[in-house]
Image (cartoon, rainbow, N blue to C red; front, side, top):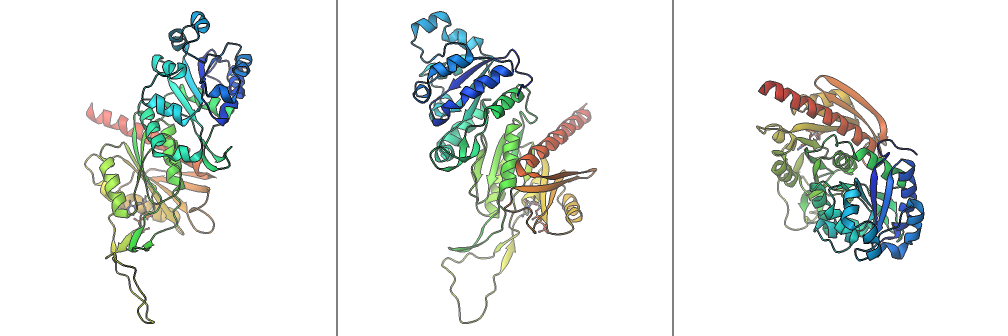
Length: 410
Ligand code: CTP
């Protein structure tokens, strides 16, 4: 696949230690086909998995491994190499490597080059899913993202160690496409996006709760798409077992009131709030301190009280972000969604039909995006793809709003 935008680019490819270290051999070929000039730097651990000779043969240049190689330094010193690079792509990037660059270490050639170069740095993480999910790794990624480091992937799926989950290196074609696209400024770069996702649980007693069937997948896909578009993303997640998308700052909550507090704490400084959570409308008036026991043969009545409406409260803020709501309906989808758009004073509502095999707990979905003056139907696609399209529309509306504000101020 020949990709535009990379012809003549000087790409420094860093390879760190991990079972995926063999994959960039194909990446070197693909980058070459796209017209890029590639120099490879490996960490010592990477060289335990794959021989430098492989990369030397494919890139046509000696592979650099150490800061202390006098012959290589004489040919092209490491500072010269740092200046030569127009892009630094590290694939695979191990958890250890991410930790080292997050802390500004320069304890081997590759980390030194990342510190010494003015070129943008992109990392394609690959590791065991548990290492990926570890809060230390996630905190390092969030820090790197705030410093402008691009994060490509990882993908989810079966892993070399037998686990299944997030942490697979993206395929060479995907990495070439991501590098080509990253030359362009992200649609949401410089924007701050808050997203709520998943269900809420309202406790009845220490062992029971009221919940709903939201899987959180749509909100997580929107968070991933917003991060890929360059936004700073804060994901307020109800109780779900989903991996945190790369570079996203996650706040875990359980109840609607906790979600309300977490969202309102972030919303004032946000440009966009996407309310993809299925918030429980009601909670038990009282939470029993002990497990409720059956009494005789009779039924029982649970007294409920209303939860705060998070969207309505964000809409009432003096400096409100662009508001995107979701409406999951089992019937009259468009009419109910339009009513919610108006009642909650939203900029945009994403409506979908649930039930009958659609919506909750499924990978695919179909969305109708409704605003006061427009309606767009996004046909059935994966939630990831729908999220990307939704983010494009959100970016357009933000641009229109900024232009309008500029006109008013002028
Ligand atoms: N929402 C919210 N706070 C609530 C309830 C809902 O912020 N307490 C948000 C949801 O995240 C979603 C939108 O409002 O973006 C619509 O949610 P939905 O449950 O469909 O609407 P309700 O206002 O609860 O209306 P109804 O129950 O009558 O359908």
